[in-house]
Image (cartoon, rainbow, N blue to C red; front, side):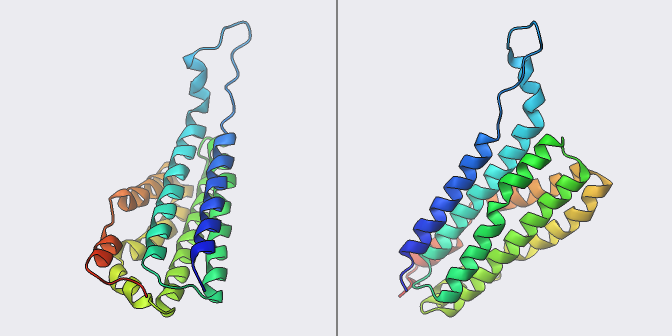
Amino acid sequence: MHKGRLEAFSDGVLAIIITIMVLELKLPAAAEGHAAGLEDLRQLRPIFLSYALSFLYVGIYWNNHHHMLQASGHVSGGVLWANLHLLFWLSLIPFTTHWLGESHFQATPAAVYGVVLLMAALAYFILQQLLFRVPGGDALRRAVGRDSKGKISPVLYAAAIPLSYVSPWIGCGLYLAVALIWLIPDRRIERSLAEGHKPH
């Protein structure tokens, strides 16, 4: 089965996710009797911070998803369902982002945000494992290697969820730390393809 439709569908869903998130950035309400000014933006600070973090995560998933499929030769029915499973959890990011920002980073929204990130990470892992098994999957397996980032991320999410009840800022700090780990360019798949391990 060719992977083109899966890539196009996934790109479309991720674009819609970003669009929904940015539409949640409402205009600030100016104080009665005063002209609108930059100080009115202060009330949007937690909403914008949660949006920026989520935008970063969606961008990371889009980037890694693209590279993963570049190294894959084919997709199977199982891969299609695993991809939908990943998109399901990613589609919840706008909801948790809005809740996190509107609550000004309270404990339960921060924990729920982490649950969605954890489930998305596990869904990505499942998708990756299924892609290893399709024809041409050996190239992806070699490119991924030991996948230290993929293994440590769920551990940090799992730690951040209960720590959000100690301090939401600790939990959100761990979410940001994971995002920064993935933000550092990961050249494994590009390097593997350049060396000639191309999918068939």
